[in-house]
Length: 598
Image (cartoon, rainbow, N blue to C red; front, side, top):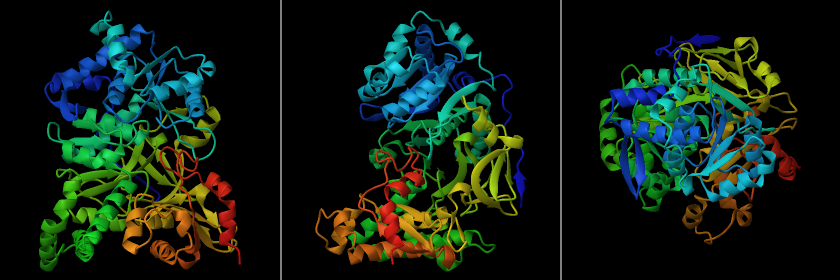
């Protein structure tokens, strides 16, 4: 199939903007908790009326400070209550939010704030403020910096005391659906980030249709979602706005290390995540079971869950014997895994990469359905997703209602719809290239099945061509190898080479447990163990699992274990954890050469 579309389920307001949602919620659901806020170690509900009042108060301060309609305002912080509050306050003052990752370097901060022409910036910490100050002389438009941990909200509220509600409402009504809402800078695997301009229409079309299609898991007054992904990333922003649009209760977690505790306290019904999160939950549970001598029971339970899920896709469904086994393991294993996820969550939305069919079936089999989707910053996050009632595990779902997905002759995925970005800020050449002929050219390669479900097979620019002329899409095998508990990252190599190889890094969190299980000296480093037969065998098993998904010509013949990690600080991954392949290839050129030495 070359093209597929679904009719829109949500009508974008002609003259409205995203601030209308707050006033609507306050009028229609005044006492409903729309946000959960952690105060003094305990979760407290924030009603729709109170949230609107707090947003207005902060917006008054921005107006008093001179923020004008259309002005860009930077927002640099971890995911937290104030991020959502200030995002809507900026819109309520008529401004345009410019997210900055809280891990950004001063040079990245300078580029984003200067390219966008930001007149003000809200930062979280003193370190963030120092980063801005260190490049202040290269930010001629910047007039104000407020620090969240130095009571930015309180200071804005105090500064805007003389501004009336009517003035805020007047300012809030200036933007239309087609006005810019935000400029999100792509993290960029090559070159400087480009600023994607997303309009209010983009978010209305995206979030309105997503909520409508997933309505059974977006129940006002009942459903809740805990957001732990960066709100600077468009995926996190999608959740923020969809929660307000529904509305359902939204909670924030700024430190993923505390996620397990926060899930237990907040008890969400819906979870947003990336594949690595769900892989870690599975691998940690399996490792814990093995350490307690229950590894065989866990593996059997996993096999039953997968078989049960697979049987759900057949005409006859699970047989009696399988249903009995499933019920037994639900008490022994599955219920405990659901408890780790808070105990109430029935669904998750996963993006940022493929989860893999095995894990997809595993989670559905334990009673926790992970709905995979696909999208980019330019498509305002998800442009396809699996519907709650017609999931096809192993695909990234059907197009968002109201959008069109087309497969070009060369296999590239093309998109059309109101959810798309309008331009790259200050970059008309890149805009014209990406939005040629009325379609957004994603750079991803994929296929559509007879029901319009999309499968992504790789990136056009990342296709490896071996010296034998074989085209290899790295993502397929990399994702399978990376799913192994011991593997942190994997990068397939082999362009112009006689065969496919791989660079592998070891998961530092899982390594100590592996050392103990294998009787290795505690504290041993990867550098100590690069040639250790047991470690090589474990990684070879991961590689074998990956090779099972591809042909022999595409399979990894040799690999090298690296003594380091691919991190944002090392410059090898973007803030959204995408590999910077050119940087990795350059920095580890000697390791790559070693793969091909005879």
